[in-house]
Image (tube, rainbow, N blue to C red; front, side, top):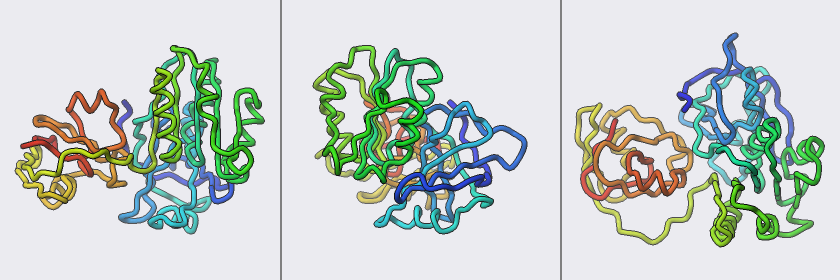
Length: 316
């Protein structure tokens, strides 16, 4: 696992990748190479003090001199993407943190990639990586309109329409996931990134077909009805204090008020930046990052949204 770092980078180029989407190429300000990463990784872009946003790395992992990200303007968002659009230009210096990867491309004999909208960003890196390694893959890519689908033309030009299936919704309707997945074999891994309805549909179909699916969410997964919140105590071993976490207040907030050194960004359980080692106790996981196996192990948790069943001991 690559260690996460803070690094100042220069914006080498900025271009329109689609309607409402810009591509930014970032380069180190020194002669040193950028940290290594694998497809599925993302970075934190520190837009301004207190404003941090996560973006998937979408260039080639083999290029250690430059990183590429794509930023979609969120009209109804919290202002982070608008700040990027308004203030980040070629020559700008920005600080990034990472890379971090909870969507890593695992070895397989064959891949089926599914992307919806800006979800193409990590999938694009996976497709390029698989192609350079000679691994068989196909991509089903949808968006509201053809003009809104970043990198669509580039992907078709490079890989052809047999491998890259473009399905803008205004022309074809919703993606035919069942048709795309129905002939997959047991040695196939499926990777999907996009809006929640697409991910939920992919999860259901892959479960019905017995396929191994990996997803990445840009917004929190809807919570299932579970046990009611309970108050509990948390021992912060490195800080040397024990704090009380009331109902309706996050572990992250209480730990920060106690002076613990924490890292956080999205505060909704999707980015993984606040992942913390659990030394003792039983977490109640409510994130959209950890796999079922990781949750069952119980040795790590996202303290921005997850809670505990009784006393908890954390490496903070």
